[in-house]
Each structure stands twice: as C-alpha cells, then as structure tokens.
Length: 74
Image 1 (tube, helix red, strand yellow):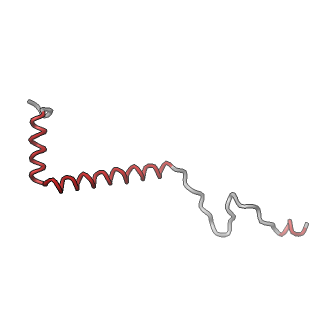
Image 2: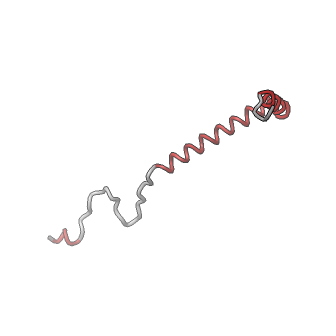
Image 3: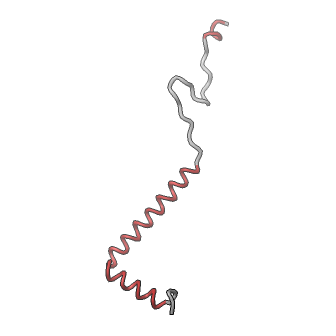
C-alpha cells in the first residue's frame, strides 16, 4: 500500500476538494490551462525568425533603389 495506491489518490482528491471547493479547484485548473497556452504561444513566437527592423535613413531591403546624385548626372 504505497503512494501509488488508488485509495491514497482518492482520499487526497477528496481532501483537496473539501479544502478548496469545487469552484476554486476548477478555477485554478482553468488558470493553469491558460498559463500553458500562453507558454506555448510564447514558445511558438520565439521560433519565428525576427522581422527585419527598418532604421530611419536607410531603405528597406526589399524596396526599389532610389536614384543617387551620380545616376541623375549620367
């Protein structure tokens, strides 16, 4: 009759339900689920390559080249 006994787990679950109540327990599990979803979303965003940052005064890498003074003279 070790920790893996079904009776120990049932008794532990009953005590937890008596202490916290059904509403608090389900709210806590809902918060845990939201935390897990948020964690997974954050991990998925970390896997995506970062978007190139545009610095003022520089053109974006996919933009068409702007004419310079040398090309306007020719």
